[in-house]
Length: 99
Image 1: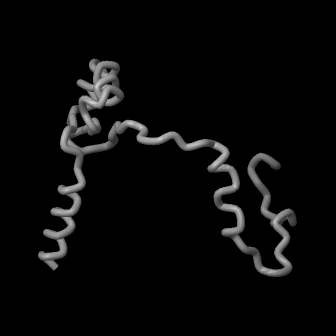
Image 2 (image 1 turned 90 degrees about the vertical axis):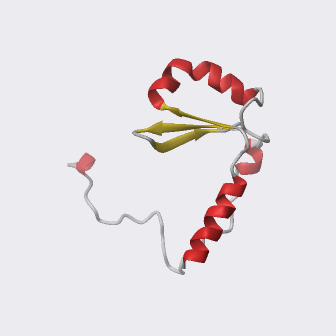
Image 3 (image 1 turned 180 degrees about the vertical axis):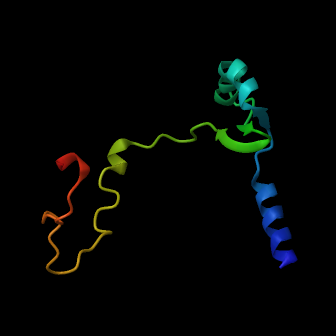
């Protein structure tokens, strides 16, 4: 199992960006506009935000534009219902808002 862990860590490490900034959230708060500009201009590939020395978020540039029209209906045809199931039929459950 050790060889699998080594392989996975090598694979992940190989895919990391060559230029990244790792910064705590407190320091990021003071420098956020400049750091975001660095990402936009390509000076850094990503910014990793740390909280208590643990990564919690990352900022990366948007590589390509996705048209909203391409997203509309992207999941169409992927959900099927059993015969006789009516999704508009009440469940009989009483919600707190109805009380």
